[in-house]
Amino acid sequence: MILLLGTIFPWLIVGLGCWIGYHLMHQNGRILLRLDALEEHLRLRGTAPAPRPSRTAPSSPQGLPVGAPAPAFTLPDLEGTPQHLAQWQGRRLLLIFFNPTCGFCRQMAQELAALPLDTSPEHPLPVVVTTGEMTTNRTFMAEHGIRCPVLVQEQGEVASQYQAHGTPMGYLIDETGKIASPLTVGAQALLALAHTPYHTPAPAPTNGHPRPKGHRSLAGSRINRSGLSAGTLAPDFTLPRLEGGELALAEYRGQPVVLVFSDPH
Image: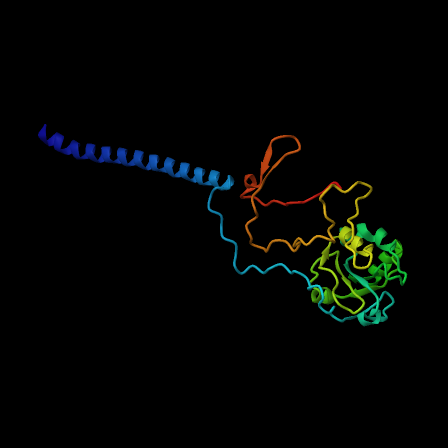
């Protein structure tokens, strides 16, 4: 009997140890899973520590300062004839960087064609610097009746001098060849500049609707519109939904989001 107990007892101890070890591992596994789920929940709620923005992210271009000399350039027009920026010295210009494949540029084509080209000091002369194939641009301008000077760059070599890295963008240039407005972004803001009386801020187009009180035109605004630097943590916000309730940006943490700012006016 003693021999039998001496043989069985060690195995009982081993079995009991294995049973206890299994349950401890199982319990720890559940704890780890719960911790992972809690961390994921906190991250989606926006309360988990956010990664720091990269310090090496390049800053967005601010455009050329008002009063700086407009960089000189020579580009061919739609007929292939070289044209120089200096040849318009003595006239106010609205320099527009354009691309016929850009949807926003296409939308402004009709209004661009209607801009006055007279020599009156009340209105700047539109000068379009476009990108792409010569034949494509020639066809596009003819189809939309755009009569202002149109110059063709190859790959943005002039736009880069003006820190205009998108379309449509542009500047007012005064009679002495100096930058007369901040870098202006967007079709409506550029068209507003085109209708600006001399030394007067332009009203923003309202499309027939009265301007809400306190809304300043894009052309007259001093807000930095260059955007946040790549890698910057998106500022959190909570806003009411049209259908009721509220929406917080933090709800979308962990997934890519396209943020679009719009105004029905």
